Image (cartoon, rainbow, N blue to C red; front, side, top):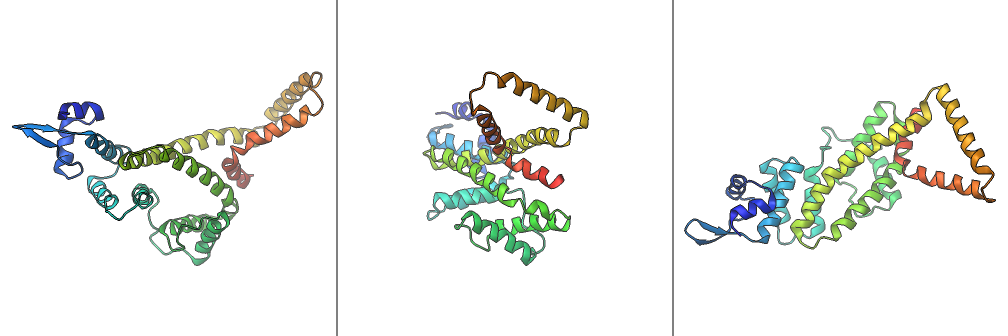
Length: 260
């Protein structure tokens, strides 16, 4: 395909494609004649990957070049390549000072309880986790740390969903692109869903007496309407369904449990 078609396929302007080629982020096409260059599907995939890092991941060109050089090392497997991209996207940078040993041990203990055995005890992510734990402790919010296992369970479920989605892609660049876009936008999705859930849980926990009374009267009225035609055991079933629905709010409930 010509560069105009490549631009149309990827949504990247022609001038930007030429810039990426000059910067070594995308390989040049095959020259087929005077002022004629042909591009292939590999250029489509690479442009989408570069665009995801620059536009979605907000990485500077120099960082993109560094990431691409690392993930293209011949001996680097896909798991390691995904780790490189993940670290490049991390918004929580390494702490300026070494975390306290007590906070590092809390972080390591959490990892051990979850059975996460593939992460080394000196991994930078553990130092970052310890830094957060230490900040919470210094701010007098150690009780939030006590709910860390709830956060870990929620994170594990999300991570499993992430990796399953990646496994459906076949090409290495497509997997990396999906990981970058999915991580950045997935973080945004998780954040806004958490905020929405906080509105819901906060309304349940902290609304005024009048709202409590009105809500209770409405709940009793609803119960009475269904009581006459519910089969034996249905009330228990409804209660179980309600409890199951609350599982989706586990992380937010951990937040508000500290505030109560």
